[in-house]
Length: 517
Image (cartoon, rainbow, N blue to C red):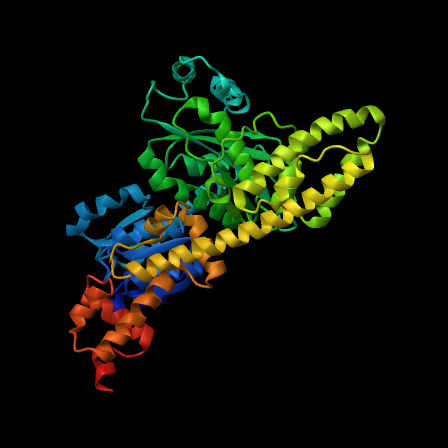
């Protein structure tokens, strides 16, 4: 059974649609209704429907703008428009937002029911295709796999990038050489609610279904993860990256009933940076916690850029990094005890000492990336002593590093939330102030900032911005003789009627009524 929200400013028509259609028989369940674009957007965020059926001409937020904002917060929600015949050209603008259906008014209940059945079939196909395996193996794989896993970036050959572009064009990954393209890597895992990895090779196609809506890509399965190389212009990455990863997570939750964790690399300017992007995506994925709800981790959100080269680390060091980032104290201690036990022999201790030097480097990079605390660094050069002394010292350093990383992440989250709140406080009067704009100013992803503000401030970005605007509006209504139109503009609203609607919804009375009281 699919869920649906019905939005139309004509109350009689909206109520008739909800009342007269036998929703259960065609596979839908109505979870909400809205009389304007703001209510519709709020309903989509709270109810997470599979389908939004909306008039294209809506008060406060137009259908086109509503579609854009729905794609920002709930990319997996399908959108169907109801529209007058003379609005067809206007509706064509919505093609970029993957509208599933466009229906002309007036429309009979019989015709609407018929179209809803067709929409239901389309959603069925999306669900079925997402859960099917149709992966082709081509020569592209032979190019992409070493591109990501081998350190091409270490080559001193100035012609290496052109050579890689020629190879990419020859195998069909790109149509022709282009310096306009940029590259990023996603690392995706799917888990059940008990934290068991359920990522299978057949899920590559599920991820690809989402990616193909936004930009060029190549995905493959490797050791319990789906690795995706993304290719696009800077504009495409800025516009779609946070939407596509949200789409993957939401589709996995809704269709497969699994949690989904995604690690996202920084954007690279050339193919020679793809190995670094792969490493960053894997490191970002390491910040997800086993058994936790779905999460998206951008390496740029989690770690500052450092000049330390971490390529070529072995599995032992990778596992240690992940445990320091997101493992429990017990998991980290057990891993270290097992490691030292396996290397307790005299010959193995030489290997252990060499490995510890690399692991110290790894610990330094992680701690430095998330905190300015330097007291731990003085301990990182002390490698001398007996086996037991080295063991005790190294375990102590690892445990302290874990505590510092967790404390640093918490402090960093609080600082970023405070920065966002400061921008709201300073710029709430800007009608164009948005989550995407604020996230860009503090150099984090919209997904990360949205989750961060809900966690740290207890409310969404939109709720916090609306609260700030309304509290200022109340002060101006009660304490000044400014006209309602002037107050509306000062508080970031271009439309006075929309401002009055929001004010009444927030305060319980209209601005004029509040003044009279």
